[in-house]
Length: 293
Image (cartoon, rainbow, N blue to C red; front, side):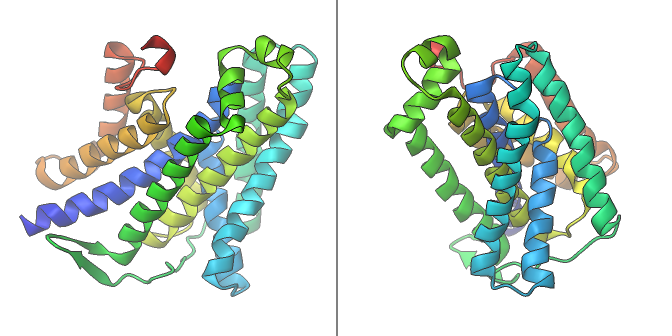
């Protein structure tokens, strides 16, 4: 039983990382309708930004974490400014920004590979990896740190959308961009903030997950796939759905690897199987959009 409870803590931490990447997708998708598959690259780049600040420049962790998040927020803002906005203002089709962001995905990946190569880099956690026991639950201090930080981020984002005027503006743009513009909402600013916020949240996912393994360029694709799958599973228009989908996906993966007698390589198929199943059976995810309720 203790082994199972420890596995649940580890799986919850993994689910939180998946949920953060799903939230990064959602923050861009909700007001713009654009699926940004570069979210996985943003998560990977966030981990590298933290490595540069904390590992190479020896900046204190309390400064390195917000510093890395700020760097990615600027990158997200610049991506919208130079890539998406010109297309929207010229009346390009809805598919054009998605294709442009796929191009940016390649640029991000190759630029990071050019600077850091294909090596793995260590990233220390702010509290190390001591074993922590909370009642019957036990895990590393980094796992509990991930869970706490993710809870704070999701509560903050939920309160933003549900309790602030700016959040309501995002919601109005998501429902009807033309009507929102007629109401005086600045569509440019909302779109730019959505990209900056998405990049910042993705960066948190990468830098929180980095200490549990290593920082590497090839981590971007798993981040992208697992985050998108978590978003589909939980509910594509709900903040709560992002974390719910992430935890369900992580539990399915970890329990399969631990208790199902199949080769570990086959356990990698859990994510695409769940994604396809939800797309076929319940494409709206477990939580429906509020407009549909």
